[in-house]
Amino acid sequence: MNTSRREPVELAWFAALCDDDYQFLGVPDPVLASSWLHCSDIVMRAEANGFDNVLLPSGYELGIDATTFAAAVATVTERIKLLLAVRAGELVVPQLARQVATLQDVSAGRLTINAISSDVPGETMSSKDRYRRTTEYFTALKTLLAGERLEMDGEFVKLAIDPPRVAREHARRGATVPPIYFGGLSDEAKECAAQIADVYLMWPDVTSEVSKVMEEMTRRAGSVGRSMRFGWRSHVIVRETESAARDAARTLLSRLDEETGRAIREKSLDSKSAGVARQAAIRESADADGYIERHLWTGVGRARSGAGVAIVGDPDQVATKIAELADAGVSSFILSGYPHLEECDLFAKYVMPRVAIR
Image 1 (cartoon, rainbow, N blue to C red):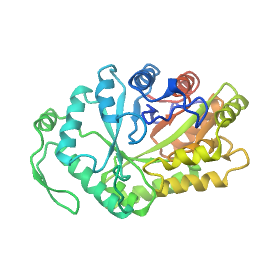
Image 2 (image 1 turned 60 degrees about the vertical axis):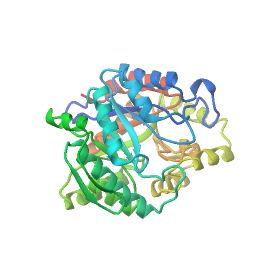
Image 3 (image 1 turned 90 degrees about the horizontal axis):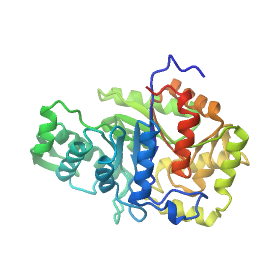
C-alpha cells in the first residue's frame, strides 16, 4: 500500500497495567498478570518495535499503579513517549503539577497525559459534576505546568498559588506542557474535551460515525478558540491471512463465559459512561460472528468495559483500515492486542512497514 503522501501518524501501544492481558480472554494467567517485570517488558518491546507512545492505564481494584510505573519505566527506556492516565480528583492539583513536572524530568520530556473523568475510587458523582470538575482540574494543571501562577475560584478548584519550582524551570527552558489526550461521548464530556483536550480520543466505530464526531468536536473546539487532533483507541489482531486472523479472534474468546465477561466489565470505574453504552450498542448490532464491518470485530467488548473493538485481518487489510481512518482525520492510534507482547511483535512485523509513521 502506498502511503508516501499521507501525513505521519502516531502509533502507540498499551502497557496492560490493570490485569488485562490474556491468552484467552477472561481467563487469568499468572504469567500475564500486571507486574513491574511483565509490564516493563511490554513497554520496552514497544519501544524496540518502533512505537511512538505507550498508554499506561489507571485502575484501582486491579493491577498496579500507573504513576509509580511511569517513573520507573522512564529510566529503562529512551525514546518512547509515556501516555500516563491521570484521574481528575485523585490528587490535589498543586501536588499533581509537581509530580507531572518531576516525571518530565525523569523521562527527559517524554510524558503525555490521558485525562480520565471517571469516579475517584470510593466516590459517586454525577456525570455533569465529574466533567465540570475535570475541566477545572486540567485547566488548573495546565496553568501550573506552564509555569504560571494559578488564580481559580471554581466550583471544584479554589486555589491561588504559584507553580512549583520544577515547573517554572521547565517553562524557562521553553518546554511545552504535556499534551492532554481525552475522550467521551456525552454532551458534558464533549464540552469538557473542547476546553482541555489536545488529542480527542475515540473508541472504535464505523468510519462515518467517527467522521461525524470529529466534525462536531472541531466545531466545539473552534467555538472556544482552540483546535485539536484526533485519536483512535482499539485492539488489533493481525496474522498472515484474514482466515488466520479470524481464527485467532475466535480462539481468544474460546474460554469466555457470559457471566465472567459481565463481571469483568462491571469492575471498571467507567462502566456506566456514554462511551461504554455506545460500545455495547455496537456489539449488539454486530453479525453472528461479532463483526460490525468486515475488519471490525466486537468480541473483545464481551470482557472489557472500554474500547471493545479490534481491527482484524491480514497485514494489508489492517494497514488499509488505519489508512482509511487517517484519511478521515485520525492522527493518533492507540492499539493493543492479546497477549500484548506477542501482538506487539506481530503488528510491528506485518503492519508498520505498510503504514507511514515517520
